[in-house]
Length: 183
Image 1 (cartoon, helix red, strand yellow):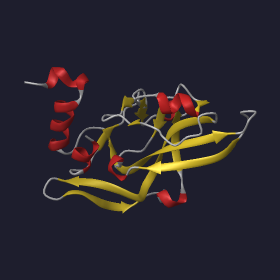
Image 2 (cartoon, helix red, strand yellow; image 1 turned 90 degrees about the horizontal axis):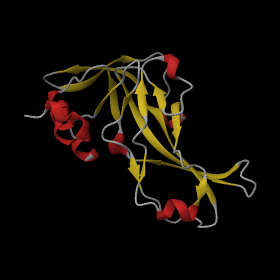
Image 3 (cartoon, one colour; image 1 turned 30 degrees about the vertical axis):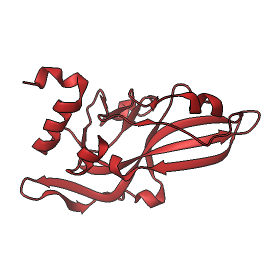
Image 4 (cartoon, one colour; image 1 turned 180 degrees about the horizontal axis):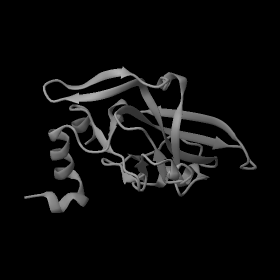
């Protein structure tokens, strides 16, 4: 489903109270040490340092260089959401059919900065969700190895209202919480 959205420029609504991502970020793991101890989280980094605007004839275009927002390569993270089952054994994670971050919310209010399930972003910017898997030491006190996985198709523009009508239609078609908007 992410590919369908990415093809036209995924947009995610951000609100003061926080809005859940759709599509959600769902993963499956393999290759972990069954006896190892792991935490899994999603963080969100800037995809670039531009502000964007939506032009109906051409789509999303860079409007200006943003206020010193750093590139994703610089690993500037705007927030993170640890999975509620973290930390847990590799055996546990690999036995999960799906590891879902369906409760992750996006907000534009700094009041939510410390909430564990809410990430604060700026509108009209492009972001990249990242999966972060950390293996912990035997005492579970410090990570000894961390892998960051990026799926480019999950990049999105943060908006306060949808700009592209095609995105609105896809969200209504696929989001089970948008039943009221269907014909």
